[in-house]
Image 1 (cartoon, helix red, strand yellow):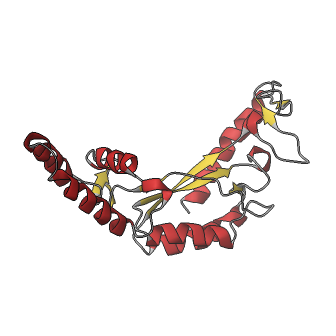
Image 2 (cartoon, helix red, strand yellow):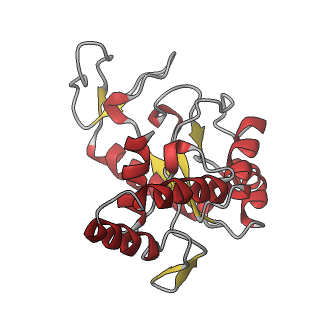
Image 3 (cartoon, rainbow, N blue to C red):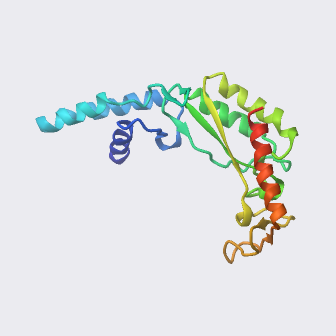
Length: 212
């Protein structure tokens, strides 16, 4: 517990993004408990250390707005992309995703970055990865994130191609060279220059769909 408290104090003093133990629901409540515990321990410290600890606590900016190039986040708490491996075979989000992202927004995360989302089917890490390789994905993704946006949470997305690290079944994987990631991965097909250009174009198309 003390280790978590010390790490929390250190992070919270630096205008940084922080997600305490991956649990963001009731974050303010947890933070208040931690602050109270810290405060109760300050009185037992030498006078010089008391001053340092109180100064640290008063400089916390974690819950203050932050503006970056014209985009303002309501606080400095961000959720990194975390694969849920719960998508349908066509890469579309399911009820699990809708609950997953909406609940983090209700917990007052300022920025959510959607998990790795493939730009083509063979670019998935697994058969359960999200995908945004055609226009049919636009509405399901929009519906999934609507509930997060009503809580004034900003949304990003990690578009991806797993390349030689893909573990999809029943389909060949591809990479710039026919070299497996390691002995446990399948040997990928080597991409021709034109195929590489097509994947670059697929990334551009995925971005267009993500911002539609």
